[in-house]
Length: 482
Image (cartoon, rainbow, N blue to C red; front, side, top):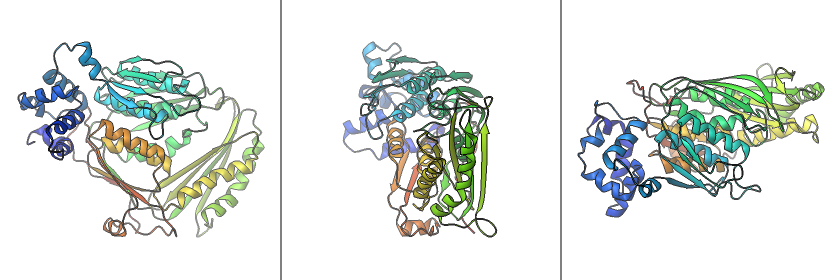
């Protein structure tokens, strides 16, 4: 524990110290924490020379790849049998909690980061159409390409698939499901592995940019990417063309810069006061541009009713943009609305709604603001979509992160569950946080009459990239209100 590796991986060692006294349980805990193939390898782990596990040959802290390879070379036979290889595959039940594609995407991301084979079974077992859909299949193929690994069972409607990751390396990658499958969800599967490749990478993603049951493309560049930037993550995108249901054919180019140090922890616990509302109302293709104009005309009234605020001089800033996208900017026809709330401390909330043929433009606006109203009046510092997207970077970060949110969504619970399966990150959920704890953290009341607050704390595992730089990470905070 006094070695360089031990200091940098203190969360792992601390978790081992808390292991039960029962020897068998200690071995099982060691196997899970250090990703050893079997309990048998735990004996070899303990009785091998200790320096082979605490320091790399160059006396540098171990990264995810060097740790995995050194454990394999020191604790496993040089030529493992097929039985031991099979034992090394980590099983994940794809039907638990949210029970959808998120389990696939998050599990495969962690598998790639730690070079740990994983098998997902019962994929989308509780869905109306169980098994892999085109978008899920393209997502996992993209991860396979990023890690130069191998897939088993990768076909449409498959309910079990295995990834055997290879070596992560930067490069240019493409993915196209040939449908309106969400480009934002395909990015979710591959983004974090690409951050740890040691070099810049580019993704050319085709599919749906504004489709139901997934974050729209505006969510990425107005919400997720700016928040990740505070954690030291540099990802940007270029929207070439929007794509809608059913044909998709949107195109997004994503540029991912490699990490040079551990991801920084983040702290978002000071909500502040609402300062601005930004709205984008759009139509595309053969959709009547008047629908966008009508949506724009309804925004001020809908915002006032939903949020209970006044706009204009002395009030909250309201910006409404109405756009019609021609053929060069969108494939096919569609419409929708994107709403971004900002507070004076930098907290952000996002809502969107897809225009439907059977709905009036006013209904689309009302639906979006209704959902936003529910999120805003929890009293938290973010909406539930950003909430679940931050779990993975928090688990990988070096140090303690804190986010103050509304009730945990099923996606967030699933993200925490998967993170705990693959990492040594320690999550603590205060539901609700006590007044004493909030006072201790300096959190001021949000002004909501009946807040539904949840505080998520995570002591991240501090995963290091291959080309890390020495630097202590301090939590990145959203400023407390003056």
